[in-house]
Image (cartoon, rainbow over all chains, first blue to last red; front, side, top):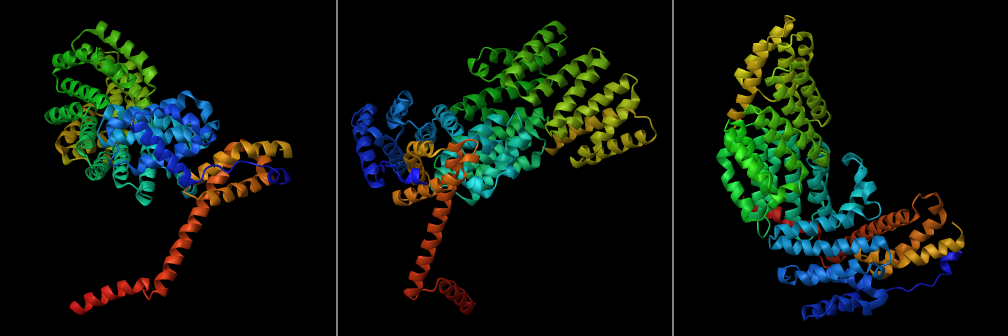
Length: 479
Length: 106
């Protein structure tokens, strides 16, 4: 204790002085000044930068996109001169705040691509702060109120959460869904001061939940969350760009439900809006959905032409997941057109892109496609194996709808291969999930027939096929 | 941690922590200084058992700041209530008037 008492340290700037200096600094920047003027502030730089973010926060409604380069120059200046703020954690806090303000300017003017750059930067700084990683490594139910208030009270932390969850959503939909719901609940109980920022970030989190639930096959809940996201986005000053993202999430859910006809009927305005508002990454994914749906309705050549044109799009290559899915589909179509050599070529390429994407469900999707190709070429044992590994991955990811569907496919292949005793457990495992899917009467009848054949110790391949077709049909009818 | 090391640790982290408590947790500079002093007093007792002393200290400052802010909010609510009752405006009386008004109209 004596050691601490004996220390003499500077007490820093008062808040009023810091705010005054920050306002003067910003005025000077607006009149053509240079970020290097910060140097004159010496040890007071951190206080003035904190105050600057407060000044910009106050001016958020009048701070126009034209002034963004000034903010960028302050950010870049501090990033280049790290010694100005010797405490690394403090530097990350300040840089996150600056990046957040820049992101917010872009958001208010719907400059989507710039917005993404700043969101990524902001998230990077937040994730580098002390304790944040430890907090994030906890599962949502393990996060106490105290921890939440420590890590989620800042808007930049909420933005970082949105960004990270958006990135992770394809990799681990169940965990991301839970985390996004948790953060959403926090934000609902502790809204941000600025209602526009609050509405946007709440909408983003709700949309992330919707996307994750869609991947998990929980389509009704996904639809409800998409509705919530829409309501939040409508409360923002400029809702249209964000409503385009809701439209896209709904389209993805349609595609996941295997209703290609409906996807093709509704895709045009979604594509147009994504293009109009500059959602480049979603636009690539949306075009992929279009190709996938064309393939699923049997318009293979059109699908192949579209995919081939997308293969040269540099923005798609930035996203290994989208690019690997593109190649998987090209492989599947080539196989459908009878060109097995080409199919093999595309699928091997897809496999190496998938390794970069590190997304388990996409790997399961690839195994499923390989299973179908092997089945169609009569290699039943290998097909059963490929389906088996798809089921294993989907089950691990809690994507039970997909796992059940592939169990039926695997059971069909096993029956064709004369391995009826292995087929029965697959079908039995799929029953609870299929029942939960609220089947229509025809599908229920098919399910009952299959159950009856199993009771007689002999799974009926025709009953199995009928059930699978009914499930596909049911998804169409639900639309 | 030896006294000398603790002193160095204190001078290195004192100001950033005061700024953190001020700008992130919305405390006045004076309150922020008190909070950081309190955090160091806790540190003298417990910092040796912390795996990462800096992360640990930040956590203590965050918790103390959040508690302090909650205390301020509670205090200001209480003061507002006292002021309201001193001015003859019972907080509940408005709602009672509304309720009575509605009842009378019905």
